[in-house]
Length: 123
Image (cartoon, rainbow, N blue to C red; front, side, top):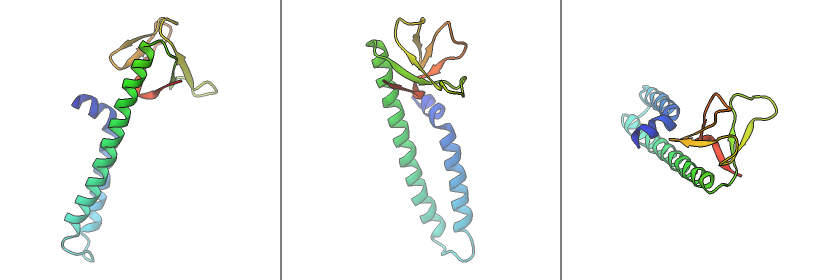
C-alpha cells in the first residue's frame, strides 16, 4: 500500500516538499516573528497532507471502481498518452481486443503500452 502511495502521489510529494521549503524560507526572514516558521510549516504541512491524502483516497477509490466495472463487463474510458491528437481516450471492455487486468494496468496484445487504471473512468 505504501508503494502504491509513493507511485501515485510521488510528484505531489515532491511539490509539497518544494512548497514547504519556500514556506521555511519566507518564514525565516528577519521581518517575520520568531514563531512564524513553526506556525507556517505546521499550517502549510497540514493543508498539504490533507490535500495529498484526499487525492490518494479519491484515486484509489476510482481504481477500485474501474476494476469492478471492467470485471462486470461495463465499458471503461482510459486516457491514451500515445495519441495526443483527436482521439485522446480509448474505450476498454472485457472480452474485446484481449483486454485484461495485470495489477493496476489494463493490458492488450494490440497495444504496446499498458493503461493504468488511475487514468480511467467508468463510462
